[in-house]
Length: 436
Image (cartoon, rainbow, N blue to C red; front, side):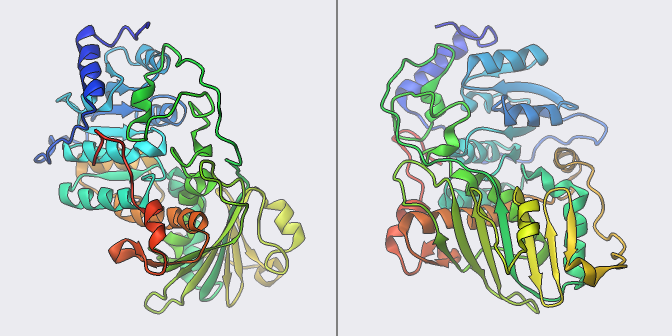
């Protein structure tokens, strides 16, 4: 097997021992991280360097990139060519043994988010992790608890949160211009899944460390239908469009209305459940309890070409905004937003409306915000407390779909009050040798 030249023979032997033994390393919780002046640079390790990882790497490249990790030697070689002074690894656990790392960026598939994040936090590093925060709700809770214990700086990869459009939309909802809001519709024209498990068993490409890519997932034969870009189609590795885009689009109502976790989730419509593959389309209804002076909220999620129909949203607007949107339905009007634009509805009722003066400061950038907080101790807007609740909400919709009934959710005790069989999809299940 041809290996990346940046991986020494000694490191290769170490990795081989770890994999052969099935050892899940669990670094102890360390003390305070290195004190860094705002004028100095962080030493950052990158876990997952291609696709979304490449995007993240580009956005933190102003700092010192001192370590790179990927299970694909070709991807690793490409990143190493751009950052030749960085040490290279195939196993993230070995990267975390590198003493000079201050912070870690995690851009792996969903099924390895939790194990990498928790190990990084326990090793004393600040963490930026891609969304969704975890693959299962139980992992999400452990990540949140570990973050509280380690008190490290965290940020989830919901970069749209840093854009001005979301901020202006939040200000409008908070100003009361559309009145109290008890109904929200969220949709995205994205689709994954609807596939049958592949039966072919081609050889593993020589550049791929497939066992490390599987991580905690039970062994299965390699197939290119799983990776590098198709893993969201499969329950074993991801959660389809709801897990992918839920943290982006549900972020806006969570922020604007101060939502945390729902009290119930049920599927309104969807295709038959497949044991292996995620649903290509889905409509899920969440219920959130009232908060202080704000009413209870019904949030309906749609994906795979589904979106609100008349009379909720006119046919004309539905066609125009079918790519994705968030519709707040208030007592005095509606606000419709996507990533980049928003509009008050009915438009004729808001002619001449002057929006309130901006009250939420512009972001210095989603990654820059995390970098600055790592150096100064400032807060981030999408830390793991905020984004953990957001991830829990998104993943709960998939649980309701997979069990085929409404979930009455007891977040405090991490259980479906009315559906014990939901525990199978709430809890994580790792193969021997992996743990968090």
